[in-house]
Image (cartoon, rainbow, N blue to C red; front, side):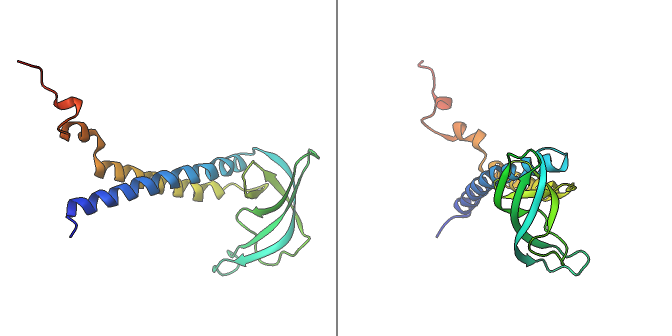
Length: 159
C-alpha cells in the first residue's frame, strides 16, 4: 500500500508536468489571440468553406464554428483550412466572406473586430500555471538538498 506522502508526491509531479505542458501550450495560443485583439497581423478576407457544430447556448448568444480560407489584403498571405476563432452566429453559409485577421496562429484566423478571444486563452494559461506552481509548492524542491545524506549540503569539515 502506498503511503500518503508517496501519493502526494505523485500528485505533485502530475501537477508540475501537466501545468508545464499546459502553460507552454496555452502560451502559444495566447500570443496570436492577444495580437488579434490589439490590431496586429495581416488583415484580409475569410471565406467560409465548411461548417462545424454550434455551441449549446440559445440564440442570439449561440456561436457556430467554421473552417475556411484566408486571403490577405497584402496579396501574399493565403491560408487554407483554418478555423475561425470564436465562430459566428447561426445563419452563415458556405461561400460567405467576412473581414478577418491572420496573426500567425497555427490553426485560427480572427474576425477583424475580435477583442475577447484572448481572455479564454489567458484563463487557461493562468489555470495551468497555477497547477504548476501548486505542484512545485507540494514538492518543495528547495528542501531536497538539505534532506539528502550524501549531498553537498551535508558534507562536514574534517576535525
